[in-house]
Amino acid sequence: MQKEKLSIDDMITHMREKKGISFTIVDEAVAKDFLEYNNYYFKIKAYAKNYEKYSKGVNTGKYINLEFAYLQELSKIDMYFRRYIIKITLDIEHFLKTQLLRDVMKNDLEDGYSIVQDFLSNYSYVRRNIEDKSNNSVCRDLAIKYQNNFAVWNIVEILSFGDFIKLYEMYYNKYQSKDSMNNYLWSVKFLRNAAAHNNCLLNSLRTPYTANINVNKSVNTFVSKIPGMGSNIRKKKMSNPIIHDFVVTLYVFNKVVTSNSIKFHTMNELKDLMDNRFTANKEYFKNNQIIDSYYHFMKKIVDYFYDLRI
Image 1 (tube, one colour):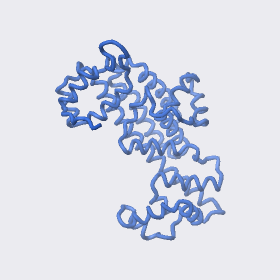
Image 2: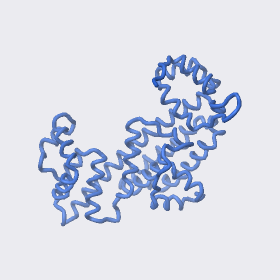
Image 3: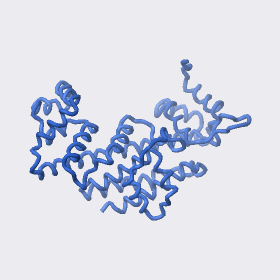
Image 4: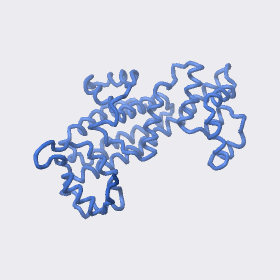
């Protein structure tokens, strides 16, 4: 059944009358301007999932003590979070490629072409994707120049991140290395894709979008060594897919990035976000135990990785 199209005024009335959302901190005129020019209702209302509703009485179905300002602030925090994820995962991709090419150069058993031939044989669709890029892509010249004669050092410039991960996995499955990141990269890919597609990430703290997650054992063990990190809180928070994958991403970043300067500046940026921007309106969330507990969990994680940055 299709729903009626609502005007901005209708949306605000719906939030106030049907959902119990208040406009005390941010008034309705400011909220209207925000929904019209800065964000949109469908995305803003997604963050309401982090709040409880009345289960009985005259307010059944309405949110408990929820201000529009809280949703607005969560949407802004999520924006900064997504931007940071894009930044850190681009660095990870660069250093994964550097690692792979470095290991290929040192490997007398690999000429740089045979692994690509095996890769394209196993993933025939990749060849079709490359052909498409030869028609219309910033990689057009590379795709045409090396067509049918790709080596690992040029094909990595053309592959999507997901396809690069498959090549990376194939190489390190064939040539074992203790420094391989094979067990972690799909978490990094998932998080980057979600951020790149501008998906809401922090709307599922109370109710994760899936209960089925295989927590990475190595990362979980690593996190268990953080001072003050109890097993119960670790188990609960790491069961959230977004939080889990972000912790895995920080772990991979710390392992694979070899530039101390990049580590230093990237972790400084995250620490600044955690300590300053994310807490700019911390009074909004002091009564939301879910949001508050996730923040303190992630602060311990970030502070620990921050201390490892050099």
